[in-house]
Length: 186
Length: 186
DNA sequence: CCAGCCCTATCTATCAATTGGTAGGCAAGG
DNA sequence: CCTTGCCTACCAATTGATAGATAGGGCTGG
Image 1: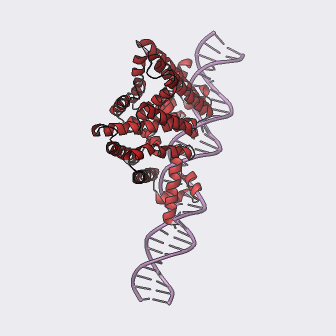
Image 2: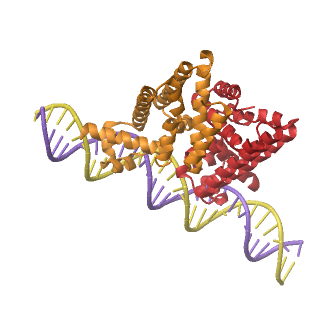
Image 3: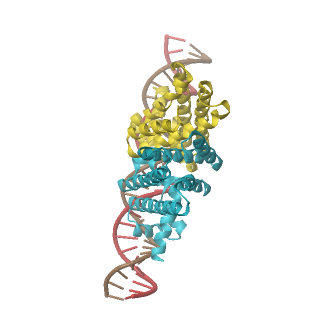
């Protein structure tokens, strides 16, 4: 149960942080959810910063894998792009949660540096993926792929935030549709 | 110094919340900044929820006044729309802060109900203002003014969040420009 | 083969710091 | 003299973190 406990902690911490942020993480609640004592969490993650960094890193890795899978499943780059917003939609469907890194971005000033680094890496990975699909699909000239990718991602993060504030997935769906109408999303 | 102290508390709390959120607010730091004791804050705002609600309400009122002023100063609705992103930009310039209500939206699950109500009211006021300008300027058909207004606001909030995560106003500027290129913003 | 040892993972118990909140006093001024 | 506004002095709960004990598994030397 050792490696499994560590995984369980990471999973629980991720769920908690997607709903309450880094500041909302606390060892006792986490331990209770996993079924161990808080001191045991310190064994696997000495400090809260260590835990936060591990959670963010794992989140980033999972997201990268998820994007690769999306690209592999989709018939072409354009189809993959069209399905990109689904990832953020899923978070809302799961207990009205939001993208971990969007939450952490808000908490910028209170984040340990290693955690912030993972947040930025997550965003860069998303932008890179989006830019690649945009270029491949020819949605915009290659020279504009990266700025457009950034705009897409920021807009989607904003849509998720607005939807979360009202706890309504429909808000998200309407916003995404609005972005498409306006020509921001393919 | 009574009414003035209350105002000073509200102002300090607003600055703090724009950088650390509702959860990051705490009576002692606030008191120290204002130059009084934490018990005195409880005199003006009995509970933290009261303080949070008052801060959010004041923020919403100030924003509404600011929007009216923007509209009054601008030669026409389109010019007012074009200057709308400046408000969010100013927050970034002031200590890399962000829109209070965007932060609170993230903290949705931990917000006292009166605070959340103010957050939603702020957003509705912004959407209403944007929709009015959009309709008046004829940027989109009147029937699409409101969804477009929501899309604009969400996208701008997202841009501010991304810029904050990197503590670079330039990120915000690039994103806004990207939105204009894509046709989301006028 | 097995006794001794160490490493892993967890526990109990406790700490110091932080934090929201309360009780009661005190000074000024209308 | 009573209200307003602030203060001192607490309190209880929460939280990140540490110290030290323990149980079990596996490896090693005799």
